[in-house]
Structure formats: structure tokens, C-alpha cells
Length: 407
Figure 1 (cartoon, rainbow, N blue to C red):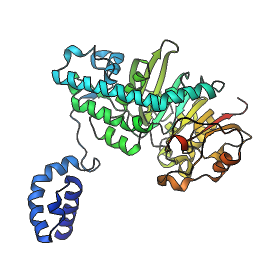
Figure 2: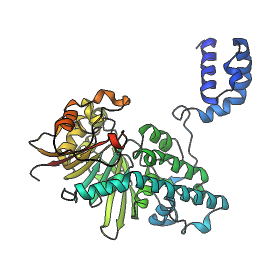
Figure 3: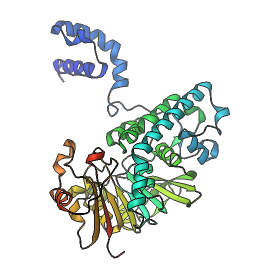
Figure 4: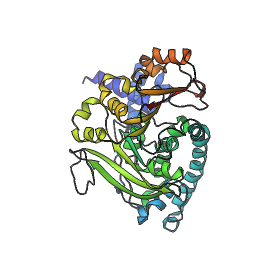
């Protein structure tokens, strides 16, 4: 690379990353070059810290495992969720006491906001509109990431839960000392988008989960399940092997798709199971994972939630997961970023529409559905929707409920 291009790149990065004051943004080129030489020397450490995460990924210093600190998963989950520090209080430093107390107070407010804006409305809507729909099946949430709270709210009576996301399942710190103020700050930051918007944003998740001490989505799952009112009975790493079986990686070190299983309970339902798998659902990567495809094709009847799915199943290269959802689901609850409306033909599905249909936001403007717009504008029986879901605000959100005929 020429010296001129190097200087231009350094200049661009300095302005973008270090937010150099106005003296560097004005004046002649000679002044810029002179100040740049000084500023680069002073600012280089900041460049390394503040650069985009995928440029200089930080290395975690934590010892991390799928193992409960203190040996009790429910106590650990309550602590990670900001609900109780009773099991760990005597082992915490004064700094950790203050950090956790602050995290707990902020998490209480965040959870109240999530419930008031989304979850309580979903729960009431479900009671009115899904009371006669299948409910005891396996609840399936492709493209859901670690969003256990929404899945549990839409389908509180399911026996098993399966979530699929891009992010690794990960682990939690093994040592109490590693639950530092920075760790709890990273945990709260990773939850910010679901609190604000009701869903996890892919780019935020990549930054917050894979480039921080969180080391995966496990702490988020523990937070959301515990905050939803459940006790954690056990957590274990799992994997899918080439035959499609779900196994312990301790017995089969070479797994095709990694994940984690969480057993949780409440007094009404007893112990149930949630499985999270880290997998790219694009047809290309899936073709290289025959065991994962066998696992998905071998799922029992499901009740399926699809939301904030980036319109991926509108694309031809997501035909495999689209086919899995259509073939396995007895019930599908989705907004328009899920499976296109045309796939729910009247011969095979009873379809109900809620809310209002607006064209997708600018980011997804290519995925407008004229037939769905027509169904909303000319069809009878469209019912109101009093909460936001997906990428739209409350008055512009929609839901489709499809129940397979003959089941």
C-alpha cells in the first residue's frame, strides 16, 4: 500500500474511531499531517480498544464452562438474572456487591418495561385467541436466538422448547470473582434491544455475545427464563451428530451442531426442557450438516413462532427451514417477516389475521406482499392487535395465526 493510501486510511480511522476534535477536521493538509502524527501516537491504544469488534476482537480472560458457580443452577440463574444474590453474597467483594445491586435494580426496571410493553399484552392476546389452538406440542422458534421470554409467553403450556440462532450457546464464568462489574454491564447491554424492541438484533448480538466476556447466549437464556418465573433444574451442553441424534459432547467430542439444554420448572407444569442450537439456517450451510437436517426433519408436531426473522424465509436459499416449518407445524404464529402469506393455502390451513399490514421498513423494502396487503384490506374478520411485534410500531404491526386443517 502506498504511503498516501496509508495516511488516508489512518486519517479516516482516526476521525471515525477516536473522534478527533475540530482542529483536526479543519485547516490545511500540512496542519493535519503534523497533528496526525502526534494524535496517532496518543490515540493508537484507543483505536485498538474502540475499533469495530470484528476488527480487533478482545480475548476473554474468564474461565468459562457449562457449570453452575457454586454447584446450584437455580441459585446461579437467580443471581445472573438480578433476582437474588443470597447464595453468593458472602463470597462477593464490596465492588461486586455494589455492581450486582445496581444491575439488579436496573434489571427490575428493564423487565418491568419489557412486560408492560410486550409480554403482558402477548399473554392477554394469547388467552383470547389461542385458547383452542394446539398448545401441548413442542414449541419451535427458528431465527429466535436466545429469545426465551417471547416463546414462553406465546406458548406457556408446551412440553419442550427449541430455539435456533446464529450465536454460540457458550458458557458462564466458573469463578465467582469473574462476575465483575464489567460482566454485569455486558449482560445488561446484550439485553437492551429485546427490552427496547421486543427482539434481539443480529448485529447487536454478534457484538455483545461473541466479542465480550459473555461468551455466548447461555447467560441471556438463564436471565430470561428465571425472570419469566421459572426455576432452573439443570443445564448441560449438547450437540447434534451426523445421525441426527442429540448427544452429550463429552461422549461424542465431534458434534455437527452445538447447543445447550436447560431443564426448568414451575409448580403448574413440572420440569420441562429448552434446547438452544447454534446453526446457520441458510440452505448452503445446512447441506453440509446432514445430521442437523435429519434432526429438524425428525421433529415431532410443533407449535411455531416466527418474529423479526429478517424476511429470510422469503428467499429461495432458506427453502429447507421454510419446508420444515410448514411440514412440522400444527400451529404457526408469525408476523410478515416470517413465511410468505402465499404458502398458507386455504386447502391446508385456517388463517386468521390481526393488526394492520404496512409495507416492510426500508431495510426490507424488497419483501412487500401484495396478496397479504389485499387480504388485510378486503378480507373480513381481521382483528385488532394492541401491541407491537416485529419491526413495526403498535399501530402498524401484524400477526398471522395459521392452524393446520385436519389435526
